[in-house]
Image (cartoon, rainbow, N blue to C red; front, side):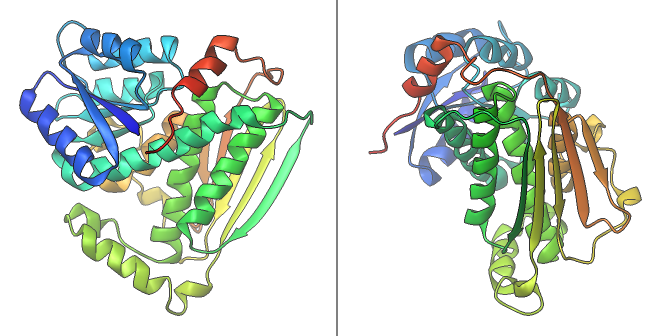
Length: 319
């Protein structure tokens, strides 16, 4: 069974977050009141995921992210942000956090965010089992239907290939996977299906997903495709994702690096893209995005034996 560690010095916030996860995810939730207690809990239990507040005594969220990345690089961390902690939250994302959820939107977003990060993290851990092969460059092109399982499969395949080529470390590959998931989801929901972020801003989540299911079967939406291209080389990973929607004016996008936009639903994917990737650029129409991540070549299986052991230790069998 999946184990999630919730870290927060507020007993009420711990109960809210833990209750949501236990209700909607098949998981065991354990708790810690601050970063220091969290590190002890991680050593004892090796959770699959950590969800943490930012402002805490003894060891705050930012330093907890740094400590987990150093000692347990395969355990992803989702940060919970509150008003006033935006600057620190952005720094935590740059340091190594996998994603974030504004505290005011825990009910609407926590479970979905955890589910996405866990899926990407599982794929990242499983790549250790791949047959290692050598290649100097790999190019891929996919034409994808508006199907969430296909989008997840493409991200997993790219991660597996990067692992086999020795590109990036496990934690960085996971963050690249999360950035790609965000782009592909935007291409599907906001691009091809033309769903506005305002539906989620107004907390109309059932309406949002119900409309997505309807449009995925109706013309002209059902015929639209997502075109995914990737080029992996010893120096960089480059991705281009294009949808067949009407696009938008990229000049009207909010500044993704401004902490003031952290709590906006519509800015989530942009912030993660800009934080996890080195370059992000849109075409003039606004229906294509290019992502670039520079890398230093690693030899396949250069990851330490301890990291590989940790990867298998925290991959648990489902009940």
